[in-house]
Image (cartoon, rainbow, N blue to C red; front, side, top):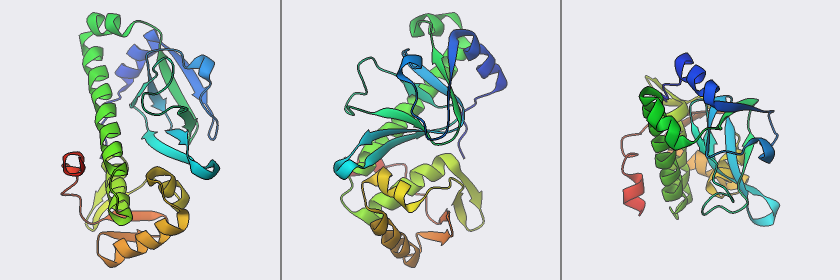
Length: 217
């Protein structure tokens, strides 16, 4: 369902003004190589994680091909200690030129970059809104819907979430224990919200996702 518009032409244009950084699955992006105002995921999948209680980590964003990755100097606003970890082997194109210069010099690429940055902001705002939901079941189904908007495929039964995530990974995304996720998934299935088949989740209802940020705020 995601349509990032990350074409070969966009990749070639970015490659002229960016430095490629390779990150192997499970590794964190090297700080020395991620020096720039913004990066773009060219391949693979990344997770932005922060340290949480009891030595655990919390996933605050998942990024895929075509996503913008803002790299602010001095850390991530509102998320001290945040770092980028590769969920799969990944490549990030880190902008080496001035963002202002790029936006002025290439109107087609500028339009793509602005859409990518706007998408990153919207995704982050929705993640924050979901995190503020006090009810675990509701928080979980909203997170599943958010993921399905990006990695889902429409089927006759509903939207199938093709992103293979474990109960532990889901728990890391919404601040819940793995056991609580297992129980909550069972309740959501009993309520007809989802269908669970092994590690595949089918979302039965997606129609009320658009107003989540406003509703919770």
